[in-house]
Length: 208
Length: 193
Image 1 (cartoon, one colour):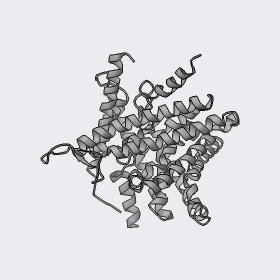
Image 2 (cartoon, helix red, strand yellow):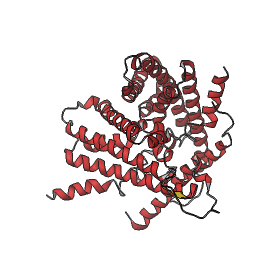
Image 3 (cartoon, helix red, strand yellow):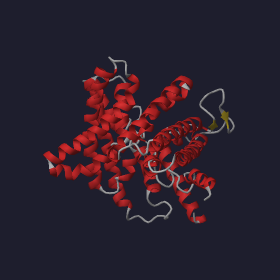
Image 4 (cartoon, helix red, strand yellow):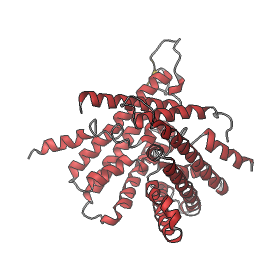
């Protein structure tokens, strides 16, 4: 019996070893769609993590009340409710971010990462462990978003913390020519493909 | 008529749902290994997307808006899609077993295809009229199918290719998708609404 250890395990599992993006290839659409700038990627990660935590909390609380046959529709309604809450909060507090993420905010509903955690973990485990697991998966997803967004912003725009003119940092001198392909949709695919290959290589090298 | 034609052209080529807007990447990576499954999935998506947009547009305009229930948009739409998929599956199994065998296994997958939810949401958010919405859904799903089928054709060849083993599988598929997306960049700016 080492209760603390179990929570820590649930939390860290999603970060590298079972990273939802690099290992399971879940949630690819927002990953490619919003990572033009680091700020957008981070915002998307936080929003998804919040929805995941909410979903895992409610589902694990109700796990003994939910009939098995209709569990998927119930999960979807729970997730959709939290997504609505998040979308309204974003619209109220971060209108610029909400505008930039656009239809990808409501599309968090379709993120298989969340439904996957609910089905595989929260519907069978106690509340605290489920939330730790949801938080871990959300953080793992955020990590992937931030890495991809960092690569794309640095290479595609030569900036950090853009596009807001108040916070933007020009990384290179005035003669820098950005590789605009990485700001384009095509660059998202290529950058993610290369990152995946790199991740595979590291996993192999360190035998994880 | 002109708007309808430009909607068709834009959402098949210029703003291709997969290669430019990044909707429906999961099925794009998941079922593009074989041409047969890619075609099956495409047909199922065209069917469900158009049906879903038809239903959600009517529901949004005639129920949600008059009763001030706009905030239920996401919940309603995803439920409509999920139940529609279930309904189509049941009806197909009864009416046309052959078609069911072709599309059947793809139908449950469609519920979590974000392209379907995206198309229904965009149809009302872009304030398309009824006919425009249907044409938009049709064009978007044809664009999705186009990307999926091209990809399946490439991947069938890719199987034979010799490459570093870390690239195998999804990594090389994504890079190929990137190159395909560069090809579609050629359409950019040709038309806009």
